Image (cartoon, rainbow, N blue to C red; front, side):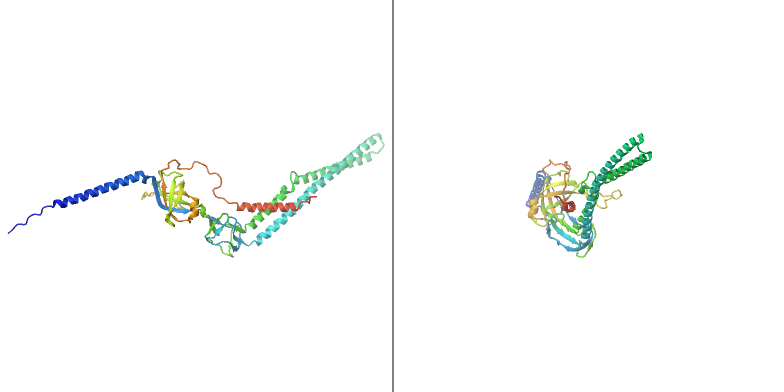
Length: 390
């Protein structure tokens, strides 16, 4: 009976396996080297995040006076210009109040004109009393000399003395009346007299209340979240709709705190929107680095004093400005998701802005225009109730 011969290893198979392992090791080393070179030459100078969203100003449209809605001038998605009528409230009550204020101002102007005339009359009466006193004083002096020589009786002299005292008292009363009348109009003209100013303030308030029954757009933009309905009774401060100026949007990117070490103001940013995909790339700049984490500014900040605390990497909001021309060509909407890549090569910028904010960042002057119109109406009424020149 023959014995089985033991199998011997195949030298060719072992050599082939070793060659494959060596090739694999070389590929791994090359891949690691490529990754390391890419990181040190390129990757470490960029930080990216998908946790980024479009933000913008949402101008709330709220009434300044109460009233009933009689018309609505714009619907969701419509473009409106600054000063355009959005909601009209019933102006009946405010118009009546305005007419009363206008009549009150006209009456006050005429009354103040009477005060100026009373000053002139008081001045004339004072002059007449002064002349009368001088006449009585001279008569008394003559009678006093005659009484000393015995030409008239002492009784007649006493009557002259009484007349002098009466003339002096009349002059004093006339002077007090003149000073009282002059104090009401001293150093003023009709338009600046206090009573006229008070009536003008009442008219200004009534005019603004009537003008504000027409609710206009403070800024140009697009209407969003309209909730007001015709016939609805609205109160001051209630939200009716919003106007969003889409040409002024920005991106708020929430970076991990470990990504902010080399991030500086003014660094270039490349952004891509999920709305347009990779075909549209926006250029932006880092405008500000958040002054706190999202959790720190939340309504209920986290309390980490408990014993089961677990460290969690926090995120800090970074505000990124977008090129306005690109926004015009490819408009974005508030809340859209964005992919953000920050180029960290530029390290000249600071972490916090060094310049102090100057002027208004975002403002409107539509309400100032209403006040100017009220002042013009006041000037017209005052001029119409002054004496005609000629």
